[in-house]
Image 1 (cartoon, rainbow, N blue to C red):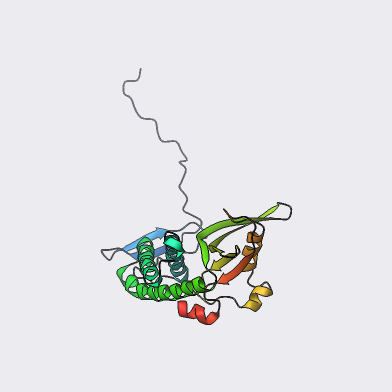
Image 2: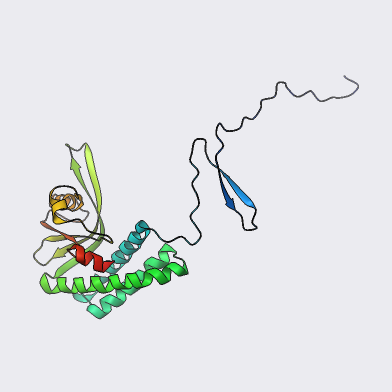
Length: 233
């Protein structure tokens, strides 16, 4: 038994902690003005933070419009006969737009900017819907409909989500795609440069949309023309 207990010396050589091979940092200011450092993974380019008052991008805006349209379409299905009249339909769209803005958690500045634009879209789509009711009445409307088509003997599955599918009075399907920008021209659709709507029509013809059997379909980009699309923005 030793007279005194002495701790063993630390093993040598002690492993050294090596710094990252590449130390890239993004520098930003903290609330008190002192710099904050954000370490990035090796060989990763530093990504700046969005400004606190950044404008909403085109993708965010399109998502808000699609959300408002989906809410409005589902609300229309609750109306007797599928159409409550233009005044009520416009009121319902404004409520759907407010819900979409709230879900997007937009800042007050963006709310003031986007609310009038969504209101103009509401007036446009209500007029379009009313014209549709006079021409070929809609029996039922369905928003955000998933579908798929198996290709290459089942080795490839094409998945889509249609913005809206209507069952018309003549039992045909109308496939509607919302565009907040410029819709493709008929030539682009026909030569394959804009394949979205032909593919969705093929899925409808094969009965690939959830809840639908095989049925003839009509492609319907909202507005039907570039000029109409510009009025909707």
